[in-house]
Each structure stands twice: as structure tokens, then as C-alpha cells.
Amino acid sequence: MKKTKIFLLNEDHSIAIDDKKESNTQFGIFKPEKIKGKKAGSKIKTHNGNLFYIVEPGTPDLIKKIIRLPQIVTLKDIGSIIVYLGLKKDSKVFDAGTGSGVVACSLANLSKDIKVFSYEVRKEFMKVAKKNAELFDLDNIKFSNLDVKNGVKEKNFDCGVLDLPDPWEVLPVIEKNFKIGARIVTYSPSIIQIEKTIRALPKNMKVERLLQNNEINWKVEIDRDILRPESNGILHTAFLLFIRKVAI
Image (cartoon, rainbow, N blue to C red):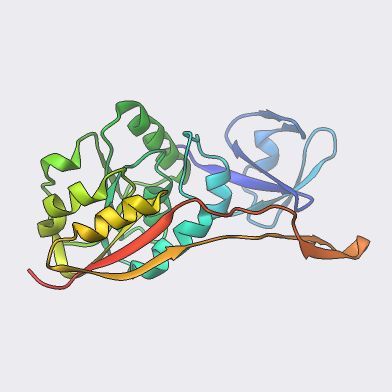
């Protein structure tokens, strides 16, 4: 897989480039011979003098560079998914509704020993997700271009994510593929979807929590004595319904 490095410009911009060929960017040209052998923290200048620092890219950096489909799960929701699913370093994760692969990549990027099995019914979306997994340099995601309503062959999942329009139809089909104690989160933009899911829950599952995350960023320009909330934020994106399998 092709690896990339992230370069930061004046703490305001980040760009991902191929470190094995010349890259012509809006900030100037990067020469591969100037990059070869450099470690994180090294200073790199473009041909016209713009200064960058080499850093190891993390999930927030890489998500900025993915190929985006019309809708992606946001970082604010991914954070809750990671924590409340109770992921461990060797979790076996089910992911349905791959989309652009943001969730699959974010979870797989936590540990090389995490195994993510990601299902997507649309071929064109699966192609995008695989490209994004290459950006993350991941090989612990198995992508399947299948409809989960027809069943899933893998078993003993520790947790799962359902980014689907009708999770209430999927849960009865897949619940047998999860361990007792496993957590599943549904990602639904409408509260009507949540209500339908709760009403149709299999008897061996219970609701743990229902979340809605709203994020307000702050404007930080200390040199200008500005330290205040931004005038806009990332408000409603989806409801996160966390459920748990409590019996066979």
C-alpha cells in the first residue's frame, strides 16, 4: 500500500503527499530527495520557501484527506462510538453500511490486532472505502460487497456499527453472530428510525444509551485577544443508539 506523510503549514493547513515522487501543491513543490530519510519533527521547505514540519498522521489528519461520499460519520460521533462500544486492542468488529469507510478505518486504525468486517451493498461505495483504507495503510479490514439482510457468515463479534436506514430489520438477522455482552450502535439521522429500532429490538438485547452529540468549536487567536465560541458548529448529525446483547 502507498504510504503518505502529513506536513503542517503554520499550524493552519495539512497536506498529504506521496513521499516518493515530486508533489506540486498550492504551497509549492516538494522534492522527494528533500524528504527521504527525514524523521517526524524535521523541517521541510517547498521550492518557494513555505515551511512544513513532518509529523506522523493520526486519524483526524487522514480523515481530512479521504475521498468523501455525500455523508460521512463525523469525528464527534466516532469518538462516542469508540468509547461506548468498549473496543479493545483485539476486538472483532462488525460494520454494516461501509459508505466511504470512515468508521471502519477509524476503528481499524486503533490497533493492528483489531479486525473489522465491513459490509456495503453498493459497489461504487465499496471502491471508495478500499481507496481510503489504502490512505490509512490498513490491512486489518475485510470488505464485503453483500447485503447483511441476507445474513453474515462471520461469528463471535465483540461489537458492531450499523449505519443503515433500517437497522430494525437487520438486528434480528445478525444478533446470533454476536457474543453475549457485545455492544452494537445504530447511527440514525431521524428519531423515528430510533423509535422503530427500539420497538423491534430482539428480546435478548437491551438499550444502554441514546446519544446526540453537538459540537461547538472555539475561535482561538490569542495574539488578537480572541478566545470565543465560533458562530457556527457541527450540531445534529445523527442519533447514536447503543444496545447490548444480554442473552443467547
